[in-house]
Amino acid sequence: MKKIFSLIILCISVLSFAQTKAPFTGYRSFDILQGYSGTGTPHYYLDVKKNGDVHFGFVQVNQADGTETTEEMNAGKYNPKVMKVAFKKYKESFYVKFDKDKIYMTDKDGNTRKSEDCCSSMESATQDVCVCESELYKR
Image (cartoon, rainbow, N blue to C red; front, side, top):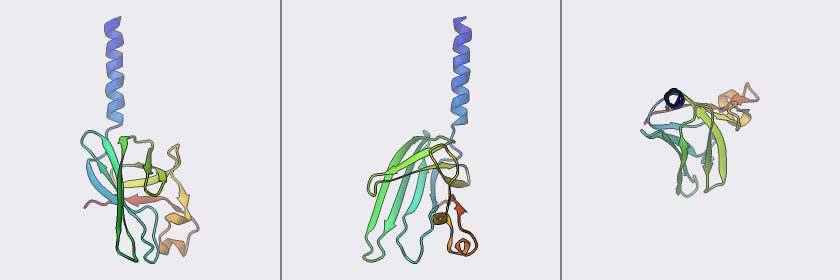
């Protein structure tokens, strides 16, 4: 009985690990929120480590004086449902989920958000709200 129970636990562990394997490793940049006319919108990135840790960061250049602000944080192990990103410098936090090609801004339950802030200038002319998503760009 103990062997069967141990085997079941092992199988569940292997299956849960397999389901949370990140879709890629390495650096990808993204721009979910669109910036207008040199506003200095941060350029975000994520870096998936080989051990499954996901690091998020941003680089923002002040358009007036050229100073650069950066921050990187560890969001923990990859979670395909939703991950919380919390930057300390600007007290900014948001939720995302991502796959091999795209990243989506979500609510805390993993539902993809829609907002006027996610529209490009071209989309703003024809739409009130847009899906908050971005391609993931390799360096």
